[in-house]
Image 1 (cartoon, helix red, strand yellow):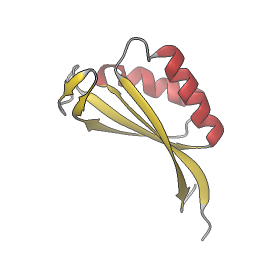
Image 2 (cartoon, rainbow, N blue to C red):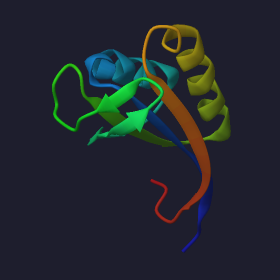
Image 3 (spheres, rainbow, N blue to C red):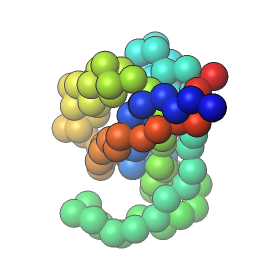
Image 4 (tube, rainbow, N blue to C red):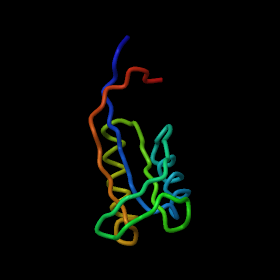
Length: 98
């Protein structure tokens, strides 16, 4: 069994842009992603966990370092100014990389 070093990109943002954001990730080269509902409080107020227009999502992508950098740049240029969003990345080891 071999491990593969990857990045885990996590994006927490407004549910209203989920479809557009997922399309962007695919165009950037993401081979997959996971979306879950999210709730919490931050600088832009309290968000509930419902799937309404005012809710948040947590979107995660396992990818290369180069793709993680491309995603970060794209989010900054396209979304940061107009949407509540945070993006962070972690170094991970993937056991099953296919």
